[in-house]
Image (cartoon, rainbow, N blue to C red; front, side, top):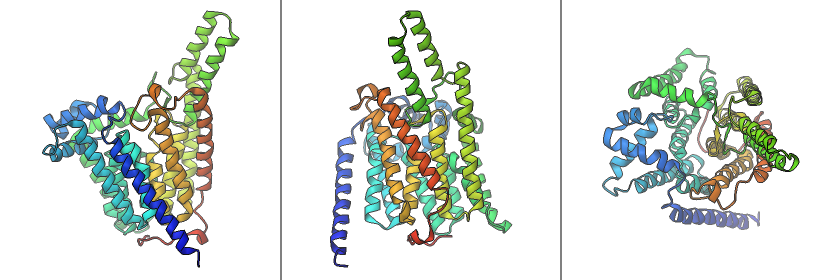
Length: 424
């Protein structure tokens, strides 16, 4: 017992360090432009929203994003226009507000200062440095989880529908959410599921049903000629790196220039979807692995108790499987599983180590390709060469698969940490 004050002092010091570093990072990164998405998408959408309003702007943008992202940018511009007319500053202020609100929500959910400091530190580079808009969906997820823990299923499904309509990635955990809502035997308790569908379809209809559905289908389809990988350190990144390394060695092993060019063309086709036999086989095999692991995860969820912790745990699992096996995965697509893992860790400390590592891996992936302020891969402080991407991707795949395996079953009852908020 005599050691407890020293332990608490160390934890308080660590909390203070994380909060200080996060605050300094926010100040230093606030005026960065972020990734190229700022110029290619966000600024153009903000201008469209300013001139046309959110509904017409969404139709004019022809975006592959759900509509509430446009609505949030429009609302932010209307509120912040009296503060500044600089579009980049408006977006950064909106992201800063989302970061502050998310940190407040997570503290209220966890009631733990160190965990809240970890949450804040995990969000700063993505939200402020690189100007990813994931935190908008993350806010909905945090608020939805909080309402669910307090027993408000109806509020949970409304906010989860908003998350799905802000970023498309929440669709990945939608089957788990549906199975969770269908666990009840009383037909009157199916009401939250009906509310979810009503809110979802209502917003989709308000903006443009055909455009919203077309955007989601476009993202889920394997578009011929598109890249298998989009800067994610998963299986597709590993295969791309391996193929490019083989192409590099071909210049040494092959003497004929035509043979070298043909080999390079073969490798290039291998990295693009449905551009040859090898490419088609790669797509099919990847989809088989993804579908098989996904079904196994859902089956394990169905056979379990289907409580809130199981919902969070299995949602992380399906995201992990998506990140490893699916095509078209981007560098920031570990954001939501990392967030969900932190929410679970706030309820059960047995998941804390995995949650922290998952957040570190998420941040490493985005920093590896775009630095801390959105520099292009060629200008990044660590060049993402294929010789380094290959071992990193192997490590990611192995660790994430082991995480999936560990989380197939809930932690033993002796490891449970009492939740701060009553749950069902």
